[in-house]
Length: 449
Image (cartoon, rainbow, N blue to C red; front, top):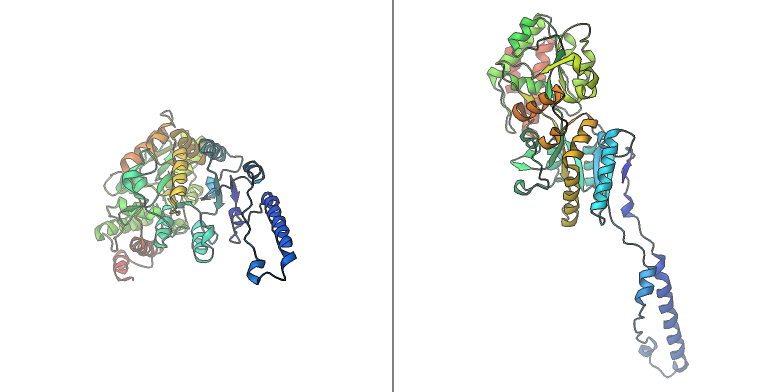
């Protein structure tokens, strides 16, 4: 079961409606008639009977078991409610939706006493999932879902709101091993708060005839444009910038509040040199995400190096034989990747509904279900067993498997790192715009609140 919510209002789910049970009316009516008959009989002597005696005790009327079973309405099962972003809809004519719809049917067949309802929400923006959670928590907590699928940057915010329940790492509700980088995206304050289902790592791409650079020196020597997203996306963070900061040797943790000065200097000086050589264009600062980077690339007519996400190339699968891909170039040639994730998180604390949720995830994390859905959704599954179902024939899949297993890390969670990342973004923007020198930009991070 699934539905598309009206984004303009918070609606009360069907399970909050009153249930009218007309089948119970006949036995109740019979009991009332009997009471009236008894009262009528007592009325003949009412002149000589005390007031207390005018309200005789009435024995409970027995209803035959057969009549009750026949008249009683069926037991109403309250569905397990899961809020999901639009790309996880189970309602539609896409192959990914069909995989999920079949999996939900399988779940309800395996667990006949359980039903599940996927409620589709926008991922970002005013009508996004996180804003709906905030609003529901404040004005209508009864409509909060049992589970929710959040991107990793919304997950920690939901934890801070007190909405998401921690998981016991020793007894995770699924048995499939999750890639360490994916699981790290659900870790906040040394606690796991969800089970990542899909990841979208970033990497470099170029035309098939190119040799992609391994180091920044290679980028500068190659003489072809280097295109990346310099602007902010909807999540408020710039994964492309954070990956390049990591490629400069910068460390990132939840408690990172100040930059590694050497790493930041190396990165900003690389930007300045790239701009001077006309390899990093003026439009870099306005490219908001890897989708816009892909649109800016014209590899068929001019070679370039672009920083894109796996989702982009999985969507453009027919072009893979005309492309080459590699980890992002770095200051020292070491391979690094970031893997933003989408995670199932539990809001319910009810033991029975928790068990229903665990059973649902066991169905969805089945390697065949998980692998098929992720491939059709143009994302990577979070488990190696699911990614293995994609096979070894496509070199790009082999590359992605190696990237997740060996090179990927998670974007740290929490307010401290988020504020650091925003100051890092401001420093990058100032250097790309030419409004600050490298030294001034580095100093500004330390002096910003």
